[in-house]
Image (cartoon, rainbow, N blue to C red):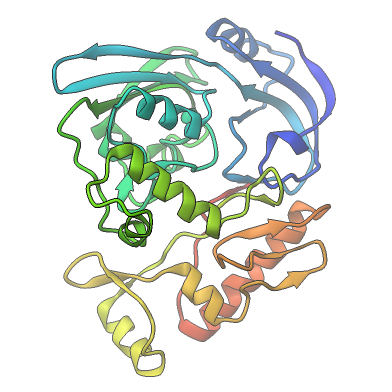
Length: 337
């Protein structure tokens, strides 16, 4: 383990924001992690994974620990199911493709989501009708307070929509080092009822889709809508889809009869945040070196050398405008530091 100083974090966050870490170390194994946590000269530490769910607005004075522990293994299996364990530093999409190459089903709808395995449970990543919690078994995490390992089973994680214990009462208290999933080995149940997957499969002339076909369809859809962070800086969806009461929705429907909604319960519906932002006039809008993506209003982008405060200012403007027009409060999905 090596401590470096005054390191740019531009390559470590998908927004491509150029801020400095006063102190930086890359963690490639558990021993490195334990050594870094034991460093008394750096009492404050920032844990950084794939950098896909953060907006950096300032230089970081604390020790930035880039968790880059790699490895995928089969823990157990029977004729129908397999438990697969992946370490935190594995790229999420690469892990999904590894599972598909072994014909393990359950994660195909989550193809091409940016970030690493270790940060995936924090926000319970999801797409096209599937969430991480659907196949999650457990995760191993190191307590920053006690410096001991703890296993979190699904019930202990308090998973919700883009939410978990790691975004609430356990926020900043643990480092997730590995995650285990229960996946199917046969009799796969493909989930193609959400969004435009069925239409894409029809376009591909596929009538009996495999889990690999579903993944390919999801990749094509995402690539047509979302910018590649390696080309245009972004963190994927910046805002959560808000949930409002049916009474509120009915009032909005009188003025906006094209407003889409998805039932959440008998009394609540979910509204696509992208629709609200587009209706507010922000889709494709440029503000110098930053703006809102032309194909997906949920995605705020850094076209070159925007600062984190530029992106934050834009997100605040969007939130204020949506609140004024629709009386709906948009909540950011990303962590703002």
